Image 1 (cartoon, rainbow, N blue to C red):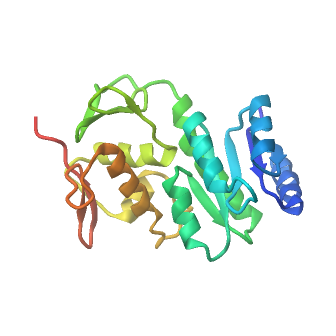
Image 2: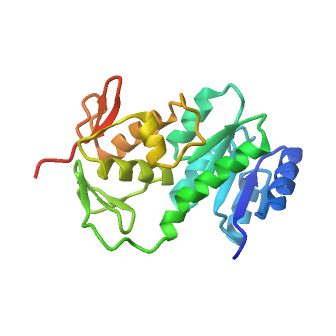
Length: 235
């Protein structure tokens, strides 16, 4: 079995070296880049499974590079942020990152988050499930076999691994109130902190992709004090 490729993008050489040594010792194939130009060169050589992307890069910052990656590649993105930079974490998730870790971090935590993202990405390589015609979600349709979300015009709407997992959890539990804790269980994201509100950010992002009114959402509704509920459209 081939080793999983990870690309570390960080302008601090000591951080890059530490991650290369640590992840390599756990069986990963690790490459590194100090910034956007070097990252693109590495991508031309080989596309990794996951990119560990420092948000505070000089020149092209991590958010700009995350947008570049999400628009062009099907891979996992873990943002590396400052310890107190909540705004940066939110922004990273908004542009499509799958997870984040704050500096200074324990390499074991980063490895746990890396494994979690890889688990969510594995489904994309799994054989298609022998069932289910596309499911209507507002004006869109979700095909669980191909993991594709399409708009009313038939155009595909890109989803991150976490967004797909959330949407799948909703459509498989229609008209049921799902708490944040339940959603974490259904999406296998137990590594996340119990009070982490990142799941709310993902749902807000999903609503925008679905064309669901932010003030009065109809497809994924908020149930105050309880969680969220997917309401299938009337036939």
